[in-house]
Amino acid sequence: MSEETAIGAVDSPRTRLSLAADLSTLGLRPGMTVLVHSSLSSLGWTCGGAVAVVQALQDVLTSQGTLVMPAHSSLSDPATWENPPVPKAWWPVIRETMPAYDPLTTPTRALGQVAELFRTWPGVLRSQHPEDSFAAWGREAAIITSGHALEFGLGESSPLARIYDLDGWVLLLGVGYDNNTSFHLAQHRAPGLKTITQGAPILVDGRREWKSFATADYPVDGFIEIGDTLEQTGAVRVGKVGSATARFFCQRLAVDVAARWLTDRARAPRS
Image 1: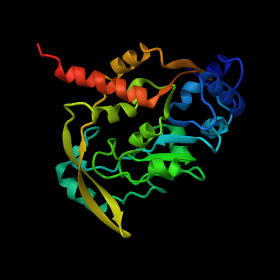
Image 2: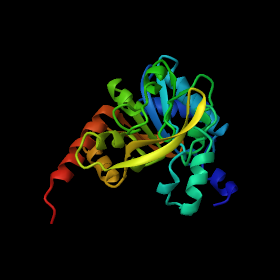
Image 3: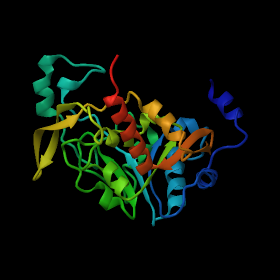
């Protein structure tokens, strides 16, 4: 579809004000803690692009709320790379020379324009995990981003668990349940999660070091089915933000539903 056709398909451009109105209609309120997964292109033509999206979210939540987004990076052990893999002979060179994780400069990977912009936004804090970091702005940003341990980056020491503790919310903005990182926290609360060894370069007292650490193989199989189960509770608010289909729900409920679903699947007899 050409840009002209795409623009002509909508009755008006999306703006900071119109997006904020849509978000409010969906249920976002001042003071909430909200973890956002987003697709900018799904919103339709937006005046200001990703900047307008971040501003609209901040306008609705206000500084008394907290806006959170994933800021995952590609810093990991080359031995685990699959898309694409690299020759085994390269692994030592990569481990020796890959730049250390820096929350200010390490870019996000495959999270879209909104998340990549947000990590650089004034006043945003970013957690210290080299692969599974999160960025946050607002009242609870320091609580959410602090103490993110190397081991099991989406588990109990992660920002996901802090959002759970704060009884926060999740907004899927034009993306599906397979993008919902909070279900990974549920994987830690159900049997069967596979432990693997990962590695990444980090700064220790200002010096670059390659660190190996235990983490999990975080599959997303079953996430669509878990999302369907969650929607059956009637607790998911579904609406339009711009042209995007958005889903808004309590993160604690989502994690609890997912943990039960994963536990039941693990205990089910295999045919």
